[in-house]
Length: 198
Image 1 (cartoon, helix red, strand yellow):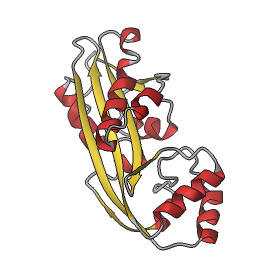
Image 2: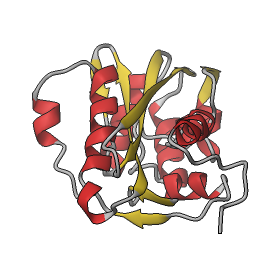
Image 3: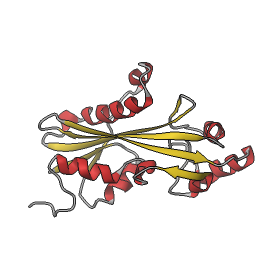
Image 4: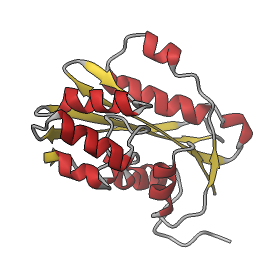
């Protein structure tokens, strides 16, 4: 069965490679703006965007399983996406310092043959240390987390920002919850623990 990752994220690519199953990568080229304008809850938003990314490439990959994913951080009722710049990253980190926020990861496995989408929401509670601006700027210069929701990379020096992380699947924090993804793929007929059929 053909497996497709609807994402250009190098983090998600690296995570999916850990499952040891061959896959293709495609840019879903999805405009997320209309979804974000609807004002829906962050929990629902990341799941809807994950499915929308998968469905955006449905016609190009018949008879395939397409993986879509989306992530955001939520603090004080605000959604934090990718900061995109050094200044925005430091501002995001400053808004998180000394607080607990939720990191939400939506995942979708779409069977393009049947149109059936299996989705999941992963929630991690992330408690950041009380840090000053100098520490936050130093971290942002070191890890350059400008393409990460919440402006941190826990797989790198970003782990030093936190005093507590509560959740089930650590890989979700990096961008793709592999434990749940493996189960979603198995439900769709692709068990990554079994050798590919010839």
